[in-house]
Image (cartoon, rainbow, N blue to C red):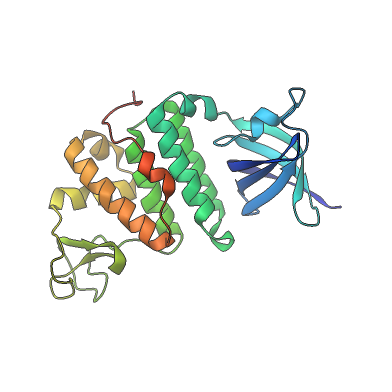
Length: 247
């Protein structure tokens, strides 16, 4: 059977039998992978700890009939322990890998892989507020999947901004003529923060008041969950406490 190697971030795992585990991974060159890691639940396993959620590994697999088989795994990024030690990092990471898993196989590109690895690395190091790292990831991953929110012109008629109504179901900012009756207006500072989250302007994001980041988070969550067509269950547990788990 042909073998192949790739870099992969572990999204989730399932027990299989007494000692095996099914591993779902997002790889750099082969998209989403589903493989069996034999014997990794035994204490004598040489690479079981490298195939846990939030870990990044160089894996060698060979093609099976229904599931590929993990032959080797070398650690490239040990982010799991630092993420799991902080509740807010852990819940944000869970929402990120759940989102990556929800995307279809055709959307699992190299850019998706690099974006997720970068987000998990930032979480493990406590570089920014975990909720902001998650929000930036969600906006960017939606854009990479072809669902970039309109943050300037009207999402329906392309009328040039500025606009102050954000409707997730319609694609982002909506002009006054296209906005459904009763649509709430969004403060310009919140919209400006959304643009910074999309661009990764961390000096602006880190300096934003908690009230603004919380308002932006609500819009990001609504937008991502609408376009994924199913709720992101992990978002219900994401901490909204400012600066917890960040240096």
